[in-house]
Image 1 (cartoon, rainbow, N blue to C red):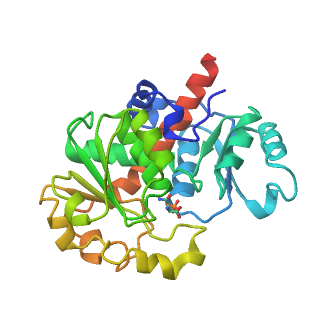
Image 2 (cartoon, rainbow, N blue to C red):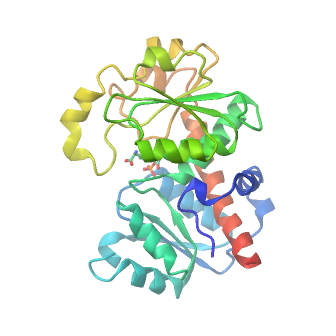
Length: 303
Ligand code: CP
Ligand code: NVA
C-alpha cells in the first residue's frame, strides 16, 4: 500500500504524475471517493491544511471527518496502530497532523489504509507540493532546471519537504540559516544523495543574489514555543524585509507557507507587497491535496 508521508516517498516520475493531476480541474478528476470517508486527525491547529483537505475530499465525492486528538487519544486512549486499524474500518484514507513523525510511520505500517502527512515535526509534503505548483505557475516554467529557490530562516519541516520537491523538479535549493538552525549533516547527505543541488549559507547577503524565489517560514514552529526567546535572538538579522529581498532582484517572488508573523520572520512590506505570491500559494493547497488523494486511489487500486 502506498502512503504520502514525505515527498521522497515518490519517485521523481511519480511526483510529476501528481503534479499533472494537480493541474487538472476538480471535475476532471471525477469522484474516486464517492460514498467513502476520509479521517482527518489533528494533534495541532490548522487553517489551510484542514480546510483544503476537507474541501478536496468533498470535491472527490467523499466525506471528510475531522477528529481532534483528544477524541481518539493516539497512544493514550489506544495505540497509534489501533487508531489506524479502527479508522480503516470506516474510511478510505487517514490524513493526520502530528507532533512526532514516527507516529505517522507506525500508522502507515499497519497498511490498514493509506496515510497522508498533514504536517509533522519532520516534514510538510502537501505544503511542498503546493509550493512547487506556485513556483511553476508564477515563473511560467514546467521544470525548475536553472531556477534558484532560496529559503531564509529555520531549516525545518517545511524546508525539508520543499528541498525534496525542488530536487524532483531539477532546481537548486539554497538554505540561509544561522548556526544551529541549518539542516543536519544527515539531511544534507540525504538531500544531496537524492540528486538535489543544495547550497548552504549563514548570511542572507551571500545567499540571496541570483534567487528566483525567496521563501521563509516561522522561526518558532508548533512544538518549539518553549524556545521562543532564544530563537528570536538567534534569528536576529534574518527577517526578510524589502532591503533583503531587493538583493535577490526585482524579478524574484516571495513565498511563505503561512501563518506569518509580520515583523518577525518577514516584514509586512514584503508579505503584502508586489513580489509576494502567498495567496496563490495558499490557494494551491487545495489542488495539491486533491491531487495526492486522487493519486493514492490510482496507485493503490493498481497494486
Ligand atoms: N501552511 C499550513 O500548513 O497552514 P495551517 O497550519 O494553517 O494548516
Ligand atoms: N514550520 C511550521 C509550519 C506551519 C504550517 C510549524 O511546523 O509550525
